[in-house]
Image (cartoon, rainbow, N blue to C red):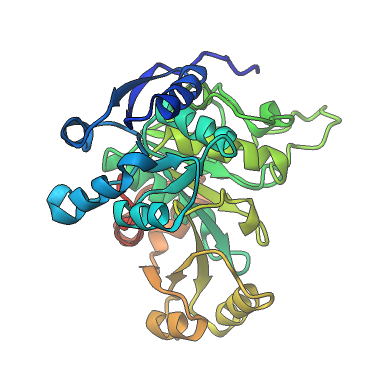
Length: 363
């Protein structure tokens, strides 16, 4: 199945600078990104656009004055960049006061700024990528991924669920899209470069508000190996999904945390059981080698004789995002090939979303 290369709909960003040279440089990049821009050259006009522009590029000539306005009540906001020719101390201080994502030194950072402008044209705010990895098999990672995706969709978030193990994962089965038409990992085997986010999103099979990227079923007579999303395809596809959805939940195989997009809007959740075996496996995962990704913990309790979730979290040094209480109905659903968002799963998903609420756009 081919991916339609429909260009994103143009969106308006804002440039605040009194420098014609800087304005022209950013406008040139914006035109290449299919993003229309409003250009203002003073603080009064900047204030009018402060809360509405999906992306705001502030020139270093206005940076200090804008930072002073923030301190006096304008308020920090996401999606601000500070651009100019240098990264001098005053410029860096202004960037910190503004809460700027980055100080763009032009022309050196043109490629990065072009990519960021393209993202603004597609969405305006990058979504949050949540990778879930099990400390060992059988701890319910796929069920937890499906529950979070389904619950977030009920909360009116734009959600994608991704099977990070296209060779043997069953996320598409769990979310009931295995027979639906749409893109699978096999169609994205050679994906590289920057994918059109909205075109990718619209090509995925979707059920109950959740777009699903799974491995799909390999035909009995197929000679090729099922698609393995690890590597370049994953690192290409996830940023595109991040530009199209509020929340991207990834069912990761053990050891694949490095495939998450770098940055402040991605995190890793370790899922483990609260018995001795699960704790031992989680310690190996977290400490050998030491986990460097920003991480949370979800624990699934046993029916009896389990270690308290808070004690597990303290032992691992990870904040506890949520607990999945034992629910025999969930196991019964799984045996019958069904997925039902039981109250135990919904409570766990709500806890995870509460932990993720540090990022705007996820509630």
